[in-house]
Structure formats: structure tokens, C-alpha cells
Image (cartoon, rainbow, N blue to C red; front, side, top):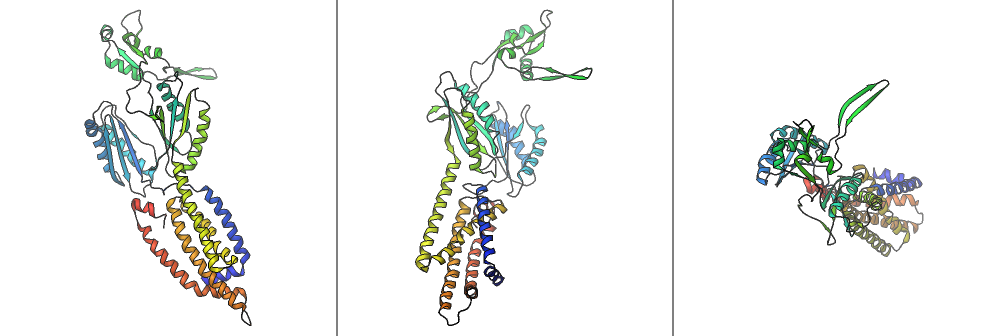
Length: 477
């Protein structure tokens, strides 16, 4: 087989050169489209179940919420491990599946189990699934600060949560955005017990009225000739006064059609929601936004899209509000690590060229040997594209090792061919150059093939590794 390949290459040299040129062009285009990251994809299929149980202590959360969910998830198909965390009014359960499980199938299995266990949870406690994120999820931190005294911490939080966050969630590749710091807006309802007694209204009725307020409902349709009109009941709350007009119960008094929330108490925006944690930017009180990406997405590409959106958002911010996009960017670490490895590869190629020239003392043979480096690179990038791999420290490290072996094989073949051509010129009846090159290559082919097979066998155990170790070291092989 090798003899046929070499004879074909020698007889159709221009065709081989054209194929090599096309490979370099196509490989260069593929390289630009490959995702770039620090490490290979290390995401184990994990589904997060989040449950809020307001007012419950950690012990009650664990007993009444976390334990029933854990028990249900442990019996699910394909689940390998279940972990949980219970805190004041909050439960998080991590359901881990096998490495080969499709994440969307895993979420469907968890959804079915959540439906089964929902009846065993306390009243008004509902579980939600967290969004699909990456183990290297938090790719960017953004800060908001203000030097305008008219912009309060509550205003800053509102800008971050309802302006910046909502617009960034529309960026392709963004999974979730967590907002920290500032002050959250909250309506305060102060009920007067004496008024409750005088109107004959219970606190439970007040609570139901608050839950049912702030909702637009439908009233059916009015049919007219050639048209149909929709009836809307506008109940959306926009101001404190709107909330005070929420109806609690019917009035027994003839001159009062209904008892409203304003009749038994007062509503105000006196203060923010009680804080649990805070945030600062460069030592100044502010708001932080932690951006997480979706799995298997290009971190650098997503970061560039976010930066483009931030440039648009910054123009719409109120006077005195400053956006800080440079607090943390995972893309900076990726670019630095890739640049370091690329620089090492470039230095290695230069040293190889110098050593080759000093060894062979011929520019032509040195150039022929060095051609193997870009060809091997582009061929590898094409294979990366086929197998859905990314450019990262492990794959580039494997390339660095492979290039050393490749150049070594090329040196042996080219140097032997160069020596045989030189000897052939001194003969009385020299053979054709193509025949000399074929024989010279055939002489050393056995040693080259077997030495390469030995190197391949050394790296073969990497492909048998499983779990997290296999995810890390298989791209190196």
C-alpha cells in the first residue's frame, strides 16, 4: 500500500501539490470556525432542581423538601449520583447522569420524577429545573456603579435586572445571568387589625387579594355583525394606588360596593427587600451580573457578542451610571493560554528549521521537511471539525508532541533521499531521480512506520480512560 502511494505521488506531483494547497486553504478556514477554550468539554450531564420554601429552617427544608426529591431522583433511569444542599428557605438538588447521556433526555427524566413528587411537597412549594449551564459556565462578570446621587441602589438594581440582564439574555450562547448587589424593590403592606375587625375581613382574605391582584384576565367576546370584540379585565398594577384599589371582599354597606386593600391598611415602597449578600465594584457599592454560557459553545465568540451588546446598552444608561465589562472575562485566560502554547509551537518550528539546516546544509531539503508542519496542522484541524472537538490546551499539547514525531520521520526520509540522490549523481549511469527517491524512501520506511506505531501505542491507553480523566486526556491522544 505504501509503495502504491509513493509511486502515485511521484508520478502525479502537481496533483499532490494541488491537493496539499487545497488542504491548507480549507484547513485554515476550518481553524477559524473551531471553538476555542481552555479545556475540553468537561460537562457531565447534570440537572439542577431548585426549590424555594419561604420561611422554612434548613432542617425543615431538608426533611420536607430535599429528602423527597432526592428519594425520587435516586430511582430515575441512568442516574449515577444525587447531591443536595439545604439552606434557609432554599433547596438545591444536583442529579448527575452517565457521561454518554443526552442532557435533554436527562431533563425529561427529571421532569417526570418532579411531577411524581410534587404532591408530597409542602403547600405552595414548587420545584423548578435550573437552566443548562457549563462547568466552566461563568464566562464574564459585569459591574454597574453610579456617581449620581439621584440614582439610588434600588434604581441601580432595577437597571441591572430589567434592562441590562434582559437584553443580554437575548445573546446567542448565554444560558443565565445572576444579578447581585443593590436593593430589590418591594411593596410593603401594613394592615390595621382594628380595621380588619370593623370590616369583618380576615388576614387570609387580604393575602388572597394580594395574590390575585396584578393580573389581566379575559371576559370573553362581544359578537357584532362582521366582527368579534375581545373583553379584557385590566388588573395590572402600575402604582401603589392601583394596589390599594384591590378588592378584598364585598361590603355589607349599601353606599360601599366593595372593601379594598386601602380600606384596611396602607401600601408603600418604604424600603427594599431584606438583603442576603451584597456586591461592590472596585470598592464602590454597585451591582454585579454573572453571565453563564451554554455548554459546547465558543467562549470567545459568546464574549464578543456580549461586548457588542454592551456597547449598545451603554448608550442607553442614565447619566452618571457606569458599566464595567472588564471585571472578569474567561476569554482573556483562554487567549493567554492559547497564545502561550502557540508561541511555544512557533519557537519550536524555528528551532527545528535551524537544526535541520545545520544538519543538512541545504535550503531545499530543509524547506521540504518543514512543509510537513503546516500540512499536519490543517489535517488535524479538519479532523477536529469532523469529531466536534475544540482548540484547547490539551489538543494543542498533543499537536506539539505529534509535530516532533512528524518532523523526525520527515528528516529520516528526506535526508536518506537527499543522500541517495547525491550518490546517484556520481554514478556512471545514474538512475532516474523518481526511482532513486522511491528506493530511498522504501529503505527507511520500515523503521519510520514501526517507530510511529510505537508512539501511537504509547498514547492508546488514553482512549481507554473513562470519566473526567478520559474527557481531559483523550483529546491529548
